[in-house]
Length: 402
Image (cartoon, rainbow, N blue to C red):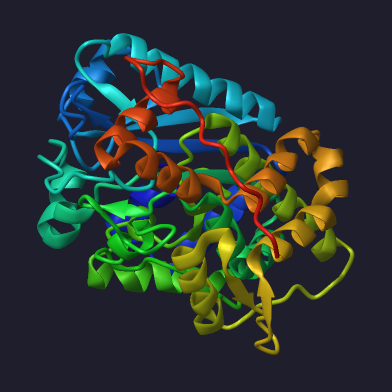
């Protein structure tokens, strides 16, 4: 939902007014509460191709605020309300998946995946002014945006602390993207990437790694300036990371939506623990790192191509490290934070994803075994835990070696 800040931006508020309202929101929010949104694709139960049933899905849930429409009529969003514990987020999202699955039985199936593996036609746009405007302004994006992301919100009380954490968190986006990579196939072909989703998202402006901002004033000035290039409000900034003006949270948008909700829990735990640790360092008086956007973008490219099976560059000296090893080292460093937050069990799922290869590896194994068409059926079964026939068992994964 939009708050007064979004409305003020639409009405033409000054940068000073935007900064004041943004600061007020960030200063008043409780630290480290979390929320999450998963984007799903609705597919025909028989053809397994996208089917425009989001309106029916929303209607069938009778006003449940955990369900919302998306840009395409074949997309639907599941929303976990603001929580304190990662376990609560996982429980809510599992409930939403099962709710949608039961209400759409016989009409559509739910698929949680970074990009539909075989579809070439995403179908019609959702009939709402916001989505009509996006489609009009970005027609290529509207034809190519058959994707699903996981958006994680974490509150960081205090405007200056939130901005410092935002700037530092940019450097870790490729780590999250690598473990969450879940879109190796596109339009019936292996893309050669662990996730093709970032490439498809580039059809929209203001995507990828956001710039660093030296002050909240500079950020507010950019929000106001960007109205002139079509960003009607801050929700038109589709970066992998943004300070969300409505909720006052840091929103991490870089992850593909996981097929398994347990993997969602792992990524939410990683995100919450990382933000907690960065905030702790800021509170201790440490100057948080703020790396150049172009360096982070190089790692983002590697993460999208290779997932956890490749290399990442040290952002200071350019030396290479195995991505899986870098992720495992990060998990070790975040263990005290996860313990304090009560999400140590969920964070341990990141170790499994790093060692086994995650969603992209699973998809390739299933496609190799049964073909790409059966892959979509397997994705639907794994998304909700409901089998529609013989199907495929969970593939046996081989641990990555770094």
